[in-house]
Structure formats: C-alpha cells, structure tokens
Amino acid sequence: MATMTLINAINDGLRAEMERDKNVIVLGEDVGVNGGVFRATADLYQNFGEKRSFDTPLAESAIIGTAIGLANHGFRPVPEIQFAGFIYECMDQISTQAARIRMRSGGRFTAPITVRIPYGGGVKTPEMHSDSLEALFLHSPGVKVVVPSNPYDAKGLLIAAIREDDPVIFYEPMKLYRSIKADVPEEAYTVEIGKANIVREGSDVTILAYGTMVHTAEKAADLAEKERGVKAEVIDLRTISPFDLDTIISSVKKTHRAVIVHEAAQTGGVGAELATRINEEAILSLEAPVVRVAGFDTPYPLTAIEDEYLPTPERIAAGIYKTLDF
Image 1 (tube, helix red, strand yellow):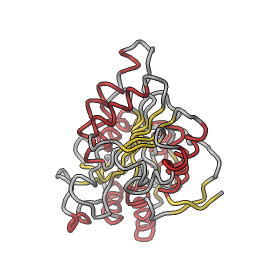
Image 2 (tube, helix red, strand yellow):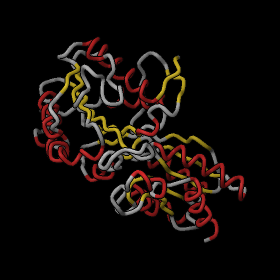
Image 3 (cartoon, helix red, strand yellow):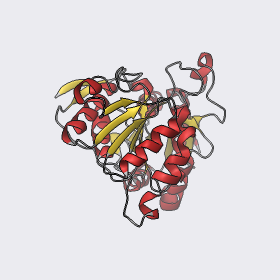
Image 4 (cartoon, helix red, strand yellow):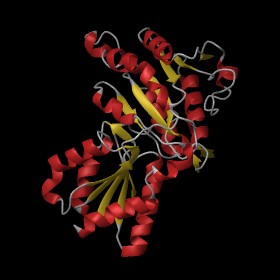
C-alpha cells in the first residue's frame, strides 16, 4: 500500500498498464515531456519513450482521430483532452466513429480507447475549463462513462477502462486531484465498471452522486443527521453509463426517497435519466418525488461566482428535507 492523491493514483494506473501491455499508448497536449498540465502523465515519457507517451498538436479532433486509428490496429491508446470544455471538438470522432466501429464492422474492429478528461468546478479555472459535460455521452450508445471520486477507485477504474475493448470516457474531478489522499495498492488491480459503491449506509433517503459531489453529499448527510436526525444513504455511482440499477433500486426501495446530485446543468442531465429509471422500477416504493440538486441551466459562471453555482451541503440538505416534508 502507498498513500496517494487522486492524481498520483491516475499516474500509477497509467504506469502499471504501460508496463503490463506494450500496446498502451498515451497521447495528448503536453502529456509527454512536461507530464501534462496537472502532471498526471509525469515521468511516462522518460520511462517509456517518445513512441509510447507523446505530445500532439492543439487539435482535439486530431487527437481522438489518431487514437481511433491506433485502436483499429491493435493498440490501446489513452488520449487526454486537456479540459472538459474542449470535448466538443471531437464529438464526431467519439460518438460517430469510436462508439460505432464494432457495430459498423460487424465485430471485425473495436475501439479500446480511454479518453481522459479533467472536469468540474471549484478550482477557479477560466471559461470552458470547468464544464461538466458528461451527460452528452449518455446518449452515445457504445461509450462507457466513468467518474471516480477517490484515489483507490481512480486507479482501479482507470486500469479497468484501459482493458475494455470499447471506448471509455474517463472523467477526472479536478477539485479532487490533490485535495484527498487514500491508501492505494502499489500493484495493478481493477474496480468493476458499472458497479456503484455504498459509501454511507442509511435508512431515510438515498443520495446518488459521483465525482466531487460524493464528498459534498456526505457532508450534506452529516448536516441532515445533525439538524433533523435523518439517516441518509450515500451511493457513489462511479459509472454513469452504464448505471448500476440493481444497487440504486435496492437502496430506494429501502429508504423510499431519492435525491440525485451533480454539478452539471440540471435539464437533460444525469439526474433526469436516473429519476426516470427510479420511477420506472420503484415508483410504488417512493413516498415523495425524486429530487434533483444540480448546477443551473446556464454556462458555467465566472470564477468569482462559481460558489453560487455548485451544489452545496446546504442545498442538498434542503433537497432531503423536501422529500421528508412532502
């Protein structure tokens, strides 16, 4: 075991897979010599050489296009899109090429690509850097979407993603890069993609969250218990495509209430899909409508007011009380 930050765990996961499989290749803007803008790829260039970890031009569509070509010829590329807001430039490559190649080729080709994307607010970045655009890929069949919330999961999920034979979008919460630490095995291991984690047991309401919002939800659970004696169950989704419906529905049937938290805009977000799934599978168990606590339907705001945009423990607690007072 070693104590690691989330960024350390990601770097260690990349190193482990590059050592295990010579076909794993890292590419992106500044990921080579400089080790990435956040140093997630530090020392990979030095340890594995310029053919396994290399810099690309500032062209996201070219980065993913190159990754698709490499994947079709036996490699397992791990491209980095430097910030989430730049993902629009390569939506065509991801959603109409990588996501469809298995179906289009009748199984002759696959696209084992893991697209790493730093995302999320709370770090005072410029425009287009903190956007949470994960819901875009929920409507792209063939793509899996993973969002870790802690160092242990980050390494295990990343290794699992790299070993997948289909494309995985791997969102990394920037706010957590260096703000949390945990004990992480030094050897390679995997965390199952598509399996949620119950991080706090409870009986009165289920809180569903992922990424940074898992920690905010835990603080909200503490607040609700202190103020009103509410015992909230907090579930870290880990993967938002596919959802772990078994764990979600089982919890909702136990608590009879659900609050869904994400920092992305509310309309058409992950919360909307989850609320629908809960209604389809467990509406007779619900004692109140499903509540969403999310960002607002605006572009991500200027850094001076981003604290007014992001869900807070107080906003989540208010959502919990809404389900109790219904």
